[in-house]
Image 1 (tube, rainbow, N blue to C red):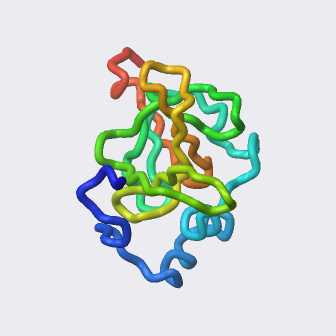
Image 2: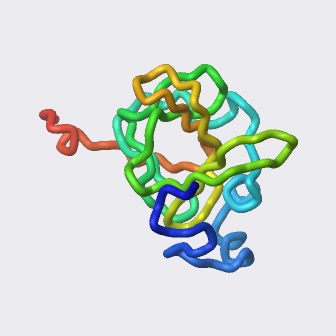
Length: 147
């Protein structure tokens, strides 16, 4: 079910768990490396409406753009699609549920889950932990507007 040429476990960015612990905050480590979930409505990127790019909080890979983001009212940042080839989809049978986990294709870090109940034309809802993401704001020049 992986959607990248990379197979889970065979990633461009490789670190030991000790190395990940050294570069990530404890909260980020728990979400990105231990497949945790932040509390709903607690993430700082949930209500972000600025234009820019959402990157992996572990390796910095560009994953989503602000044009892909929508308010799903679920408590986590939601996107209707990914930047092509940047996310791996993997079956997740944890917690007695059948879901699809999403991982960064560059480093294998846990991002969240994808559901087929999105309101846009893609029908998809990539439900992503804010702790899994960083945000790079577009400058006026990048947006093609005058300062």
